[in-house]
Length: 573
Image (tube, rainbow, N blue to C red; front, side):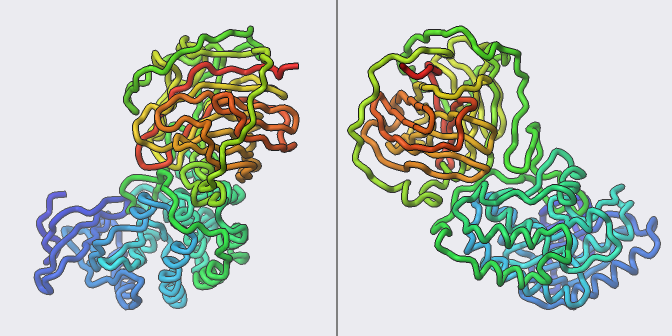
């Protein structure tokens, strides 16, 4: 909208736009200061009584004085539309900060401690925000947070047909009583939204995700709260009970106030808290100032509570293919980390793709934080040697056939495909670990692959998975291109390191090729790198499942790995 003035306020630029309003940066010539002007959607002539309600609510909000609430300076009408004038907050939004880095528990608690008294103050006056979310938490030049948009969603309760929607609030943050459209809401609805914000600050995403706003809203009504330690096992276990109470379906079971929630957070132990901030998983993007609809981060992926599972067409394949003896290939010249992977139809061996958006980060992008005793441990190279007897190959792929069944697709987080030098997995975002698995299930096996990082001077990890039951249960055997390895299990969404991160001279660092081999034999798990046995552990929880490949970036740059000569073999007799 090309307007030079709204009232006396000189418009400089548009800050944002949503379903209920457009927000502009403007200059107030009377006080010679910049302000934010929010122009509310809807024509006053078509909505009798809306002006009176708007003025009454605006006057009430303007009387609220708290340093953690964005003050309202003025309100008025312009060309049949109402507007609010508020303090300009140039420090951006909490949503912006979450996009850059997820929070430590301590930092998240400190931020909520600044906001909670403000919420308690307005709740004591019978005012409910109704649309509390990261986009409505703004920061000033000094980094102090304040809550904005009090009353905007409340204005819309009498005029929901302004946008053709009867949904009030943002589905990703709506309490169950808001989803049900209960007649009476109180401050506990905002406490629920604060719990969702806490979950998002700590993980980069909300607890419930789906493909449509209505589906997200229904999850708040019906779905159990997923374990946050699936994504952040470094957090103290007590955080689970705090979130469960804040996000209780029954508001009578929730914290009575925002400050009560903060006091519980402040009482949590710090022994398991990370010392620094993990790298961010990609959260919701876009301009989120709407109060009716928030689609969230749904995409072409089928989004689940713990991780998105990308749908791929899979051709039928024999569960026991004929053995193939692969040829050994040498490392090829490096390719770019993005844009060169060749597409091909998925057929033949029938493999499936899984993207873990929050779980594998505990192993990779935040390993030095979440597993500090393992990540920096510098153990000498073990003196074990590999067994000399030859295993019986039952499945192999040298990746020369682009129709051999491995996934070929691209998302904003990763890309998968065949090239002349092998099968590539490229990861474009930190805190994201894509993996692909075969369609055959085995018990006692030996799996191996040759793997080489393609990108120069970029850190990441890559390796093998065995006995994959689902995306919540499997064993992993991975190396970093900095020369460390780890063995562990992912069980019921929680990481249990069995050995690592340990340094080994057997691992070729940088962009060199490593031959990785994992033995899953009964309760014995062995990990070989370049024919040297670097680690051996015992575990009895998983006894059969699929096998697969995995890669992940450890910093903000794209990380790409090329795999060759994947093989599954029966253990030698």
